Amino acid sequence: MFARKNTRAGTASALLQPPHTLALCVKGNSMEEVKTNLYPCKHCNETGTCTSGKDGTSCLVCVKAHKFNSKKEHFGLVCGTCSGTGQVEPKTERLNRRARPILSILIVYLLLVFILIFGLSENQYFNEFLVFAGTIIGSVTAFYFGNAKNT
Image 1: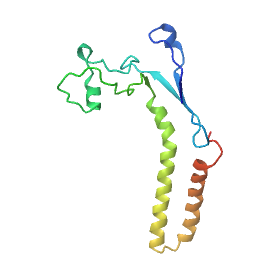
Image 2 (image 1 turned 30 degrees about the horizontal axis):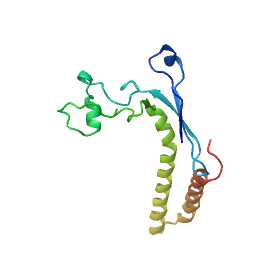
Image 3 (image 1 turned 90 degrees about the horizontal axis):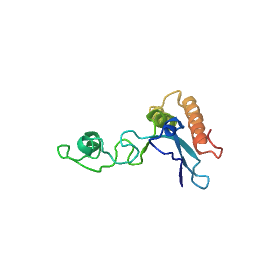
Image 4 (image 1 turned 180 degrees about the vertical axis):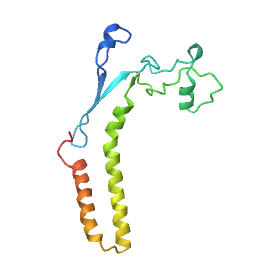
């Protein structure tokens, strides 16, 4: 299900190689292949376990991420930066992948609210707005649920 390209960390050749890629493949028409660039986690040195604190303990950021008592020393906590995978995905890449679906959901719900408001208030422009909103909602629905692959 997951395919990961790994390199040996700590060598000069690993620093010059392109970032790792993770591909999620699900059979059938329900989901297409998603590729993302993964970079080695510098916080945990690709181990997945935080040892960045004093004397090899887990750092305060990872302790607070797990909602533990920050006054005690904790050993072996899962890295809060990479969630224990040893690989991190850039925040800008996550944002770029999620911005379009979130924006489209907001637009659809906003249009549905305006349809409800115009319908209940018996606005004189309700028919025109209903055609406009129906076209946009239909386009968004066709884009995300159509059989053609999104590029």
